[in-house]
Length: 438
Image 1 (cartoon, one colour):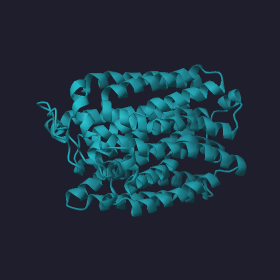
Image 2: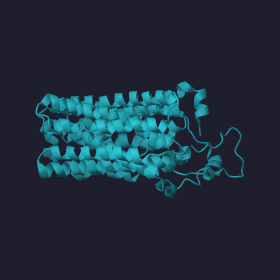
Image 3: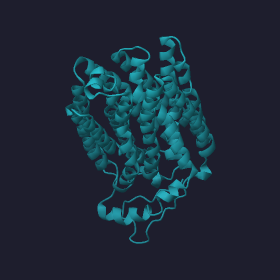
Image 4: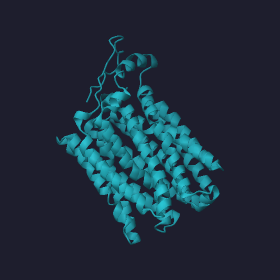
């Protein structure tokens, strides 16, 4: 496994790989959110005879399988590394996305969405494992910020492109195109990324001892892990609501065309992506001046959650212009929390050897947020006939996220993991020492 020392000797290559990880997560979000544009299209609604509740279930199908497989994929990333598990899963979800263009029944659509969720479950655990092993604390905010630009520009780019393809061609071509084009990413990934684990014989002897004390029980005993799960749920609820329901909200309640809704979805997610990268770099700069990393990142996270609450101003705005402004502003402002929350709850406060598993556990909460946001919002829309009530729920969760950050994310409550390196056999020549507990 490469360490930060290895990364220091090859600074250019690690940024190239980080760029590939950001591009990979962007493609995953394009593929997972393209369905939201399709579900705002009247032809699709008529073809599948969809109610608002049905649309909620279709949107949610991805998140349920995605959540179930987060912990297993975190284990896979820790055990087998990043390169090959990521490549195999990437090809699988791209092919499943393209296949959605051939479905003719609602059940088939849901099954493919479930399959995409399984395959994409590798993305976040593998990516954070790689970042933690290649960047120091004073760089993680910016590195995570750049990486998360991918998962924000995914829906930002995917929404208008998907809408344009649907309007000018068809929803079937949209799925085929977005799925098939993504496969091109595999070429540089396979050529440029090195396997980050030693040969199998060494891996069994060395890694088995090193990871023997990283158990699911010890992780779940940490208030920091639970605080991260609450944060990820509350943050994810807002962002996934925007991914799954924003196009429909803009079309049905604010009277925009499907293409216009894609444009404003782009502005919202481009805004949160840019703010995420800038705020992550700003926090790194403050930390480099000697400030406490935990205190600095917590301040950014709380500010982001509070700023996101301005979504309610858009809900009650009487003019279209102000409604669109607050819609874009609230999600963009949440970007203050993006990189710093992830760096804090998955890197800064987490022992290096537990990154994959902890990320997998926290991603369960994130995927649960996606499933709940999609289904609950659909049900609330069905019973109330308005998007006001779904947005009120967002407001409540953002306040809970701010409170969880202040109360639970404390260094003394981090997971307690003890490195155990086997006495025999000794570490093979050239293998790095086990990373110290942070």
